[in-house]
Picture (tube, protein in one colour):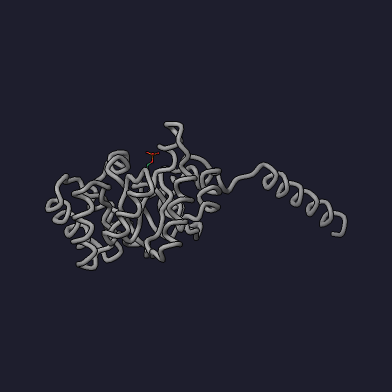
Length: 217
Ligand code: G3P
């Protein structure tokens, strides 16, 4: 499973990218609103240092409008992936964009049939929302597992992005469930790499080293 970073805050993407683990970026209109910058400029700036797929979402509700916006996004940088919501219009737009060679990430997936439909419409990625399912008492990682099983059984190359990740355990569960990618907010990425025993271990090594080097000076 690879890591994408789920934010439109360029400084956070730069910091995560520095860690050497970021294979791509996902944004959405809410994340763009949080960043408070011109969305096109944000995507351009991200594309200046991230080589992997960068998702930028369309806002139109009809397929023609989505296709128009998707084509515009695709012009911003070659690594842009157009994010389209899973609706009937979204599926139709996905087919048109995919046939033009534009990669599509179908988002707001909450059941397995939605994921299968998106894949058959030509989506390069599907994004099931783990946290929002858990919020309503459903099981987000179970959905990822079901989609992964179906895609494997039917030799579907569409990649599963586990989205709406809220805590480090979601990352582990997404990996176990067969997600190809987890898209993770920066603060969850930091929480996932921290452990009190790692910190305590470093402190003890430093102290033991200090003692032995003082004794043998
Ligand atoms: O990738 C989708 C994600 O940004 C949604 O997360 O926490 O708003 O459900 P959340």
